[in-house]
Image (cartoon, rainbow, N blue to C red; front, side):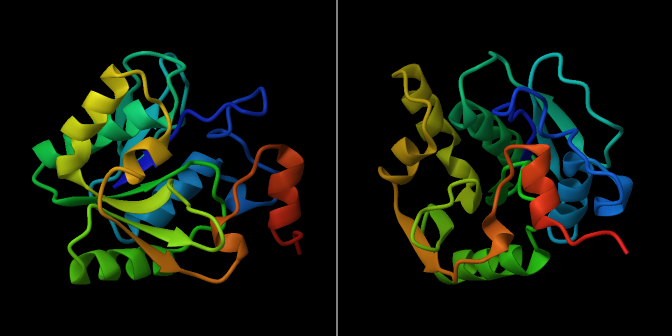
Length: 189
């Protein structure tokens, strides 16, 4: 239900990154909204203040304060999803070009079977930004942010989290440069 759209680690906006002849000519955010939209509705996109994004079949939310990292953005998204009646939300980063609807199914299925606050994939490390979160965590996130916390691990390590072991695969890979994106995607035919 939530796609983070504010990653700028490489000095340019990852959300609008594209490589010629890849992703059907779409940007990363357009591609991820399409993938997430196969399993989640509505799709919420968190964007940085002033960030320009293409027209998306999603609801756009803006960071209230820039530069605070993913935790406050996830909290805002969960709060919005909760207000819309959702009990759970799938949260992912915008820089995961090989994310699949099948991974979302795996995590959502586990969330339906267990009584956890967070269900996240683990392949030797936690993937906080490819996970299912209970929307009722929004107030807990607000408390953590008010205390100065910005890391997703600060939340996950203080709630009931279920880790689903998945094989190391490109599905969870993120990109930090156009070269990373090009290396992950198959060459054009």
